[in-house]
Amino acid sequence: MREKVTTLLDVVGLLLIAAGVAALLLPVAGWGALTAAGVVVLAGSWWATRQGGAAR
Image 1 (tube, helix red, strand yellow):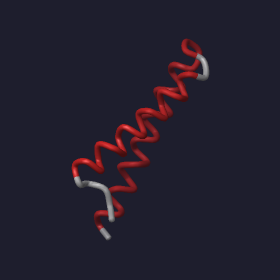
Image 2 (cartoon, rainbow, N blue to C red):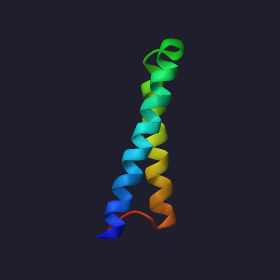
Image 3 (cartoon, helix red, strand yellow):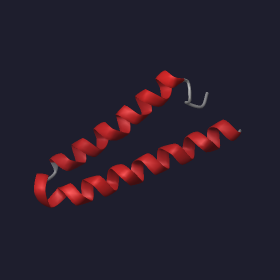
Image 4 (cartoon, helix red, strand yellow):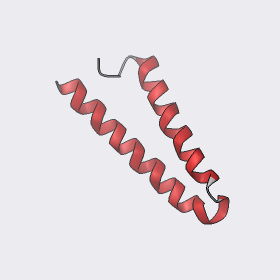
C-alpha cells in the first residue's frame, strides 16, 4: 500500500512540474509546450519503471 501511495504522489508531483513548465513555455513555444510536458511525464514514468519504482 505504501508503494502505491508513494507512486501516486510521485505522479502527481511530476504532473504539476510538467504543467508548470508548460504554463511558462506556452507564450513562447505555443501549444508545443504541452507536448514537451507530456514527454516529461512519459520519461518520468519510463524511468520509474526501469528503476523498479513503479507500483505493481
